[in-house]
Length: 352
Ligand SMILES: Cc1cc2nc3c(=O)[nH]c(=O)nc-3n(C[C@H](O)[C@H](O)[C@H](O)COP(=O)(O)O)c2cc1C
Image: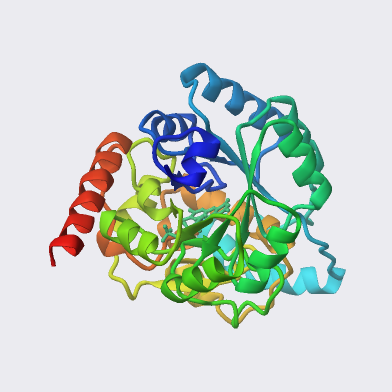
C-alpha cells in the first residue's frame, strides 16, 4: 500500500490543492475526501472565524480525512512613497471600474491564530506553502495527530522541509497554476518543470514526494508515479469542478484557453503566480510593485470590484499550463475518470 495513503488513511494519494481565495468550498473539500482523495481548504487568506466555521462544516459533512493549507508568513516592509507610486500606477484600473482612490493599505498576519484553530480542531492534514514551517510547529502538529506537508520548488527547498521533519513534501513544478511556493531560491531559477523537479527531489529526500504542476488526468498520474512520486496534487482541474467556488468567468476563461495563455506575474500580489494573461497583466506589466502581501492588499478592491462587475479583464485568473485538458465536471466524475485513466495508462505501458 502507498505510504501516504496509509498514513493519512485515504484510499487514493490524490490531493486537491488547498487554493486560497474562495475556490475551495466546503462542498469541494468534502466531495474530494468522500471520493477517496484528500480535499483541502485553502485557508491562506481566511480569518479565524471563517476557518473555524469551514472546518466545522466539513466535519459535519464527512468523517473522512481532509486538509487545511496555510501560508508561512514572511517579513514585508515598504516605504510610504513606494506605496504612493504603486497605488498611482493602478489608478487606470480603478477608473475603469469606477472605484475611488486607495486610502492606504494595512497588512495583518493571522498565521499564529489560524494555526491555533487547526490545532484546536485537530485537522488531519496540515499543508504549508511560501516557506517552511518551524520544526516546533511541525512537532506540535504531529503530536496533535496531524500529518504535515511542506511545499518545495527546488531540491534545496525540499531538503529544508525535510530538515524540519515534515511527513511529505509537494514538489511544485513551474507548470503549476497559482502562486509559486518558492522561499529559498531566486524565483526565476526556481522555475523547474515537474518532469525535471520530481525525480531530483525524490532522489534527495526520504519523505514521500507529492508531484504538482500540470497534472490534469490519469496519464499524468502514471507519469508522476513513474518519476517516483507517491502522490499527486491537482489545482486547476479541481478549480474547474462544479463544486469549486471559482468565479464562472474564471472557469470559462480556462475552458477556452490554449497552453500558451498563461503568464507569471507578481503584479496582483507582489509574489510571482501563474495565471491567464488578461488586460491587468498586460497593462501593468512594468509598473512599480510592493512586496507580498502589501501588493495583494493594494489590488484587492480592484479584483473584488472586477468580480462584482463580472469583468474578467481585471481579475486574477490563476491557472496552470494545461488548460486544454481542463473539464467542467463534478468531483465524482473527475475522480472516477482519474481512476480509469490511470489504470488504462498503466496497462498500456505493461502491454507495450
Ligand atoms: C487558483 C489557485 C490557487 C492556489 N492557491 C494555493 C494555495 O493557497 N496554497 C498552495 O499551497 N497552493 C496553491 N495553489 C497551487 C497548487 O497547490 C498547485 O501547486 C498547482 O495548482 C498545481 O498545478 P496545476 O494547477 O497545473 O494543477 C493554487 C493554485 C491555483 C490554480
